[in-house]
Length: 93
Image (tube, rainbow, N blue to C red; front, side):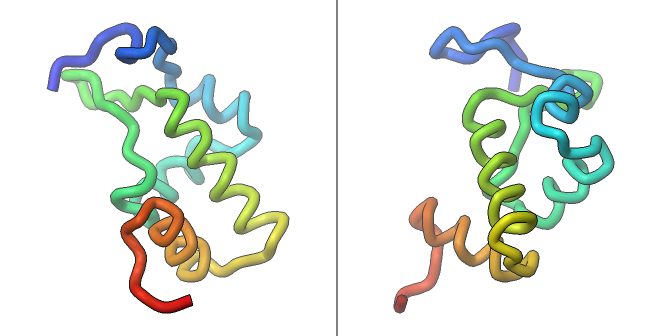
């Protein structure tokens, strides 16, 4: 995938440090969440492997932060809710 400076909607792509400052989530936590929430948090990558975040990724980060810090869900519980919200969840509930 070739990385562009902006997304199709014209939104700028942000570096991981910028996202960390904007969201208040440390860089190491963003990297960890990327592994814990596969299919939910997927920043784009430059040819050199650097992460670039778009508006959708920012919304996901804020939602993960809300579920974990404010609503006190476990990682597994937050992952289940996010997959349900994205239409990837299990039937039931």
